[in-house]
Structures are given as structure tokens and as C-alpha cells.
Figure 1 (cartoon, rainbow, N blue to C red):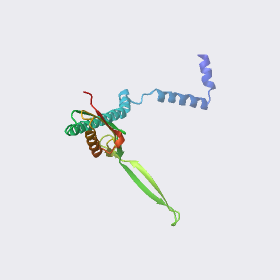
Figure 2: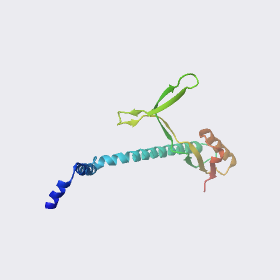
Figure 3: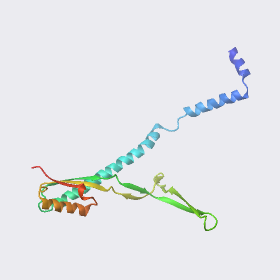
Figure 4: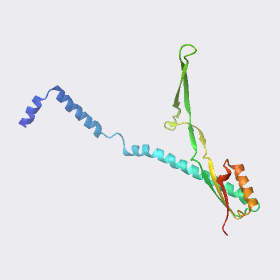
Length: 180
């Protein structure tokens, strides 16, 4: 104990400040900043949004395929039919932004303008971005497996039907005969 009292007498103001600030730093580091549940929610929100978007895309793909199957199944000579559709992407969500334009300069020759964008938020749902538009995914290719897929006239009619419904290139449509 004697050595401790001698050590405390020898310390000047700067050493005391260093010890005090070190103690405060340790307290700040050791204090919890919120419950672990709140932290989990922060990390799971983007994952939940991503999985719900994937589910929406999957449902949209199934709906398109089912409707195309029904339409082609009603055509003469097609018979039983199965359809597979692929997408280029998973769609796009357009977030509303405020754009502020400011013009600076003196005279006609030195006019410059600046644009500043800021995202518009919905306050009712806890500060989520305001979505002005959601674009559906674009169809990239179509595979049709049909009983009448061996007949060239039926193939041509199915291909024309797909071209009328979707903005795809002809080489991205494949029609094959269904196995018996």
C-alpha cells in the first residue's frame, strides 16, 4: 500500500487526465447501446424486403406462365402444353426524390447550375422511402413444351403468339415437342 500512495503523490495533472479519460473510454465501450432484439431487427429488415421481393417475382412468373399455358392450350393443334419463362432481372423500384436546381454565376458567359437530390420519406411507416413506381421484371426468354410442338405450322403460330405478348427476340423463344 505504501508504494500506491507514493505513486499517487508523484502523478501530475496530465497523468490524472489520461487515467480519467481512459476510464471514461472504457465505460463508453462497455455500455450496451440497445437490446439485441433491436439490433436483430435492423439487420433483418433488408433481408425480409429482399425475400418478399423474390416471392413477388416468383408469383408474377408463375402467373405469366399459367396464363400463357392457358392461351396456348386453347390454340388448335397445340394440345397439352407446359411453359417456362425467364426474366432479365428482378424488376426495379423507383424512389421519389426532391431535386433542387440552383444557378450561379455573373454575366451570360459564366452561368453554372447545380442539382441536389434528396430522397422523399414516408413518416407514417417509420421513415421508409416513398416508392413512386415499381417496374416489373422484363421477360428474357420463353420455353414451350407442347404435344403439337413437332408441327411447323403450330410452332409458327405459338411463336407469333409469344411475340405478340412479350417483347422478346425470336431466338429467345424455343418450342419443342412434348414426349409421349
